[in-house]
Image (cartoon, rainbow, N blue to C red):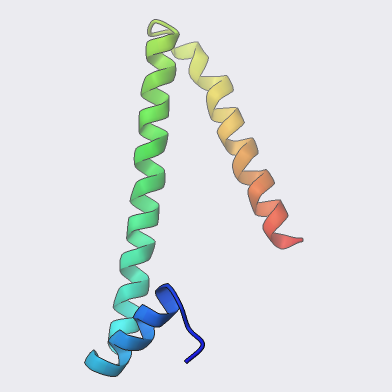
Amino acid sequence: TDLNGVGLLQYALSNEMGDWSGTVLAFAIFLFCFTTIIANYSYSETNVLFLSKGNRMALLPFRLMVLAMVNVIEHKKQI
């Protein structure tokens, strides 16, 4: 086949374990991505609080920058 990476893994699992395994793999990858994003955001927010000596007002610009970056990335995907 002409597959590589996750596509090849999904194809191999589907052949050996049935069609349902592709859905389970996709769900597992989604959960991994989602929890990684949440964890990295939490780490960075904690770092902002540490660097600003606990000043919670520093979180507002940080959160606005995160929202701006998410919007820019999503906008570029649609182009």
